[in-house]
Image 1: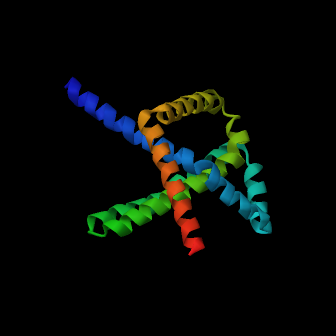
Image 2: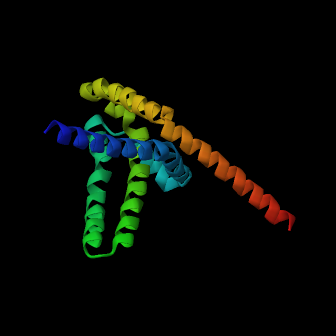
Length: 168
């Protein structure tokens, strides 16, 4: 029983680490991408409205993308089960990217209101510290370091190929 628990805990840890890495990778760039939309007058007005929401409304707006993307994720599961694995995977990845972008931007807009909740102000810094610690452990791992070396080598190789191609 303990070995099964260890295996399940290890699997859950790996899945959680992958999720955290994806969120970490996508959070800032995707939020910046949506921030660019604030140059549009209607979008800017919507963002100002969201920023002015009271805390309960901000909490509702922040949680809305989770509910809105649920049917899309269910459709992806249906596509998987119907044999359309690539389409299902594409839909799932697209929903994850879009969801991360929206949640990241909404968090930027609603964080001041959310921090007015005592429970949120208590738990958010703890969550952030824990998450940052997990990310730091992953980045310090030998696997991560080796991956960074390989990535640098591939980039150098691609730069050489581009220079060679340009000289032909």
